[in-house]
Amino acid sequence: MTAVPETIAAISTPPGRGGIGIVRVSGPGCAGVALGVLGRAPLPRRAHLHAFRDVQGGTIDYGLALYFPAPHSYTGEDVLELHGHGGPVVMDLLLARVLELGARTATPGEFTQRAFLNDKLDLAQAEAIADLIDSGSAQAARAAVRSLDGAFSSQVRELAEAVLNLRLWVEAAIDFPEEEIDFLADRGLAERMSDLRARFTELDTTARQGALLRDGLTLVIAGRPNAGKSSLLNRLAGYDAAIVTAAPGTTRDVLRERIEIDGLPVHVLDTAGLRSGADEVEQEGIRRAEREIARADRVLFVVDAADTEAVAGLASDLAALPGSTPATVVVNKIDRIAAPARVEAGDPPRVHLSAATGAGLELLRTHLKQCVSYATPGEGTLSARRRHLDALRRARSHVEAAERLLSERRGGELVAQELSDSQQALGEITGEVSSDELLGRIFASFCIGK
Image 1 (cartoon, rainbow, N blue to C red):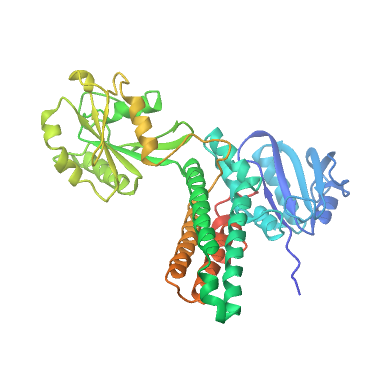
Image 2 (cartoon, helix red, strand yellow):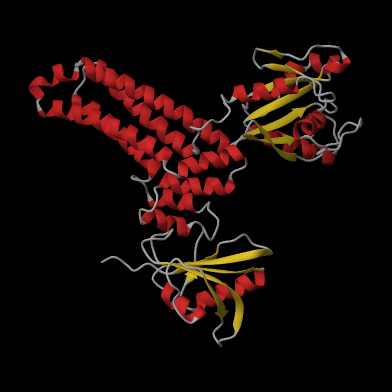
């Protein structure tokens, strides 16, 4: 017997003071809540002006009530929205009244989780809602909307359908063992395997662009004191985010700024100069710098082009960096040595620039995009997450294993199993294959009220 879902409620607008605040209610108890707060059930999908009443009949607020009966609602259940004035005290009083009438406080993402469980959207679409809310650029927002519309899910399902069709072909060979070798050696099957790999590559490229739009790139600016690290941060940010002085050790803590490069969110961290013999406070700053370096996506190691000692010690400075984070050497202050702005290939690559004048800054931006294979988002860009990339990687590896087994003329059962595993991995993206642990982890990252 299926349990009747509880009625949940939450404030769906951001905390703080605003013109409008919304309390959202979902579940079978909406009619009772409407009767207790409004005195009657509002007509479906029509905005009604009401006084919102407390238990004694006093007025909490005046506002609009909207009722969406199941299944034509966001969650697929009865939904009631109470739109009042957006003061935190008013919203808390209104929510408390709704809870008195039998609802319970919703957990983070529970409204969207119910929409997923009631087949109003799939898991990738549900995640796109959170990505749309958290989008850090116009390009990221557009990509999230495309995934919310189902474009990403549609491509994943088409890929899963192609895998299924191959699997049916192979399993047909298993059903006729006397013909299996010839059946599996069919040239058409090998060509379809090759075409499937190409489709995986195309979707993986699109998803990686989407993941970059969502997660961005974390850069740590590191180097010796007075190399021009804070000046570079200010130049990238476009304003004086960090204090710049001639005194070494001015930066003691980690400074964080967020910038965009053609829609790519970049989280830039300026850190204390790396040197020995620093005082206790500066040493703590250096420890924090090393911690951020170890977990960044890339390090911009700044060296003063006019400092011959720093240039000579560059190799040892790079070797002393913690972790294995890839680095780019930024040869700064080229305005002092009349060197041209340029990018040198190598390991690590070098970008020559002047943070003081801005010369070479565009070369650095282009270099950073190339480091992560980022292309300016187009109409086909979709929002994606790291878990989607992992699932695509596993699905593709199973297809490649199936293709390898096929070329080795191995049994069809092994090929069919690899294709089945590929389907399973693709199903994880849309939620057709999911676990309670995965769902809990995904929806826990949502805001309460969504």
